Length: 409
Image 1 (cartoon, one colour):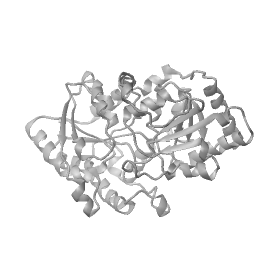
Image 2 (image 1 turned 90 degrees about the horizontal axis):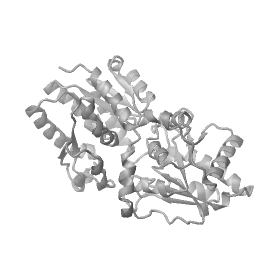
Image 3 (image 1 turned 60 degrees about the vertical axis):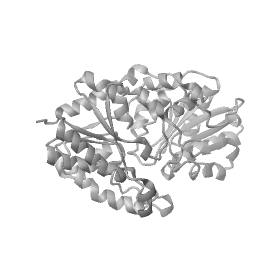
Image 4 (image 1 turned 30 degrees about the vertical axis):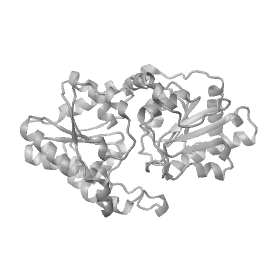
């Protein structure tokens, strides 16, 4: 959703008029943020579709919004394509099962389609992990994705992804994709979002009870077992400073916010146990409930310093990185060395970087340098000229360039 939302203000000036088909928010149980509509140009047509009630589908173990809404997407888009002329269908969502409709619409109406692979669709990543580390209903989703992905990829006309690894995996898996247009386009940094967050700052209640006498370091984003390596590295280096009585370390408190996708009040902490095992429970708080998009920006702006946690999967791209950079706070990022986010941090001089394979002494020195800068309130030295290519307006041009490469009848 975020990629399209940030691109809508720029499509028209680049020669494309966009209409959006989305699920009515009343059928979704994810956290809502009504302010998001303020970032969408008023002239954009937005068509909302229904979904089967989760009250009924959950009796059969089906809670996925993609599966619950698919029939209604088909019905609505069938009507749109039957009555008006469209040149392209663009799927930009992590609810991938909906993408199989692209092949149906292409066959029926002759309209090409593009899929934006924001995360892996069918992935082997969790297949050999212990059951305790697998997502809920992994058995079902793994088999469903293995069945649906080839149906969508067989006739797709173009691919966009945040990761070269995702594209390479698909092209190795489906030989028909080798010559299809594809582009690696990260999510964009959208400055207007910060204007909206500032305008409505009075609406946001603090998630954490930040102690003004402490150095409050904030991470807003998901947790999970694939994040535990980066959290362990972070907290072990912090503990080293505590044990050595390094100045400033005992004044720090970490806030991990919005770490679970579970409904409010039901999330299981995955990061706090690491702190507890290291004897650091008094220095760490984990808030599993998700928060709204603009409230998350507000939390970043209220922090003394920011933490970016990355997955142990090298293909993982931390899309949250851009709001962190735009918050203009000092950042400490703990990332896989092959992550695209690590490259962006280095290119733009946007923060302090510890890679998962970093020597422990080097990692500690980076952490210490970061904390000194936060403590003394030294402004980040981000290279904003280099950062321009990651802005949403620039990245929308790259999407349009791919659209223009597709043969449209």
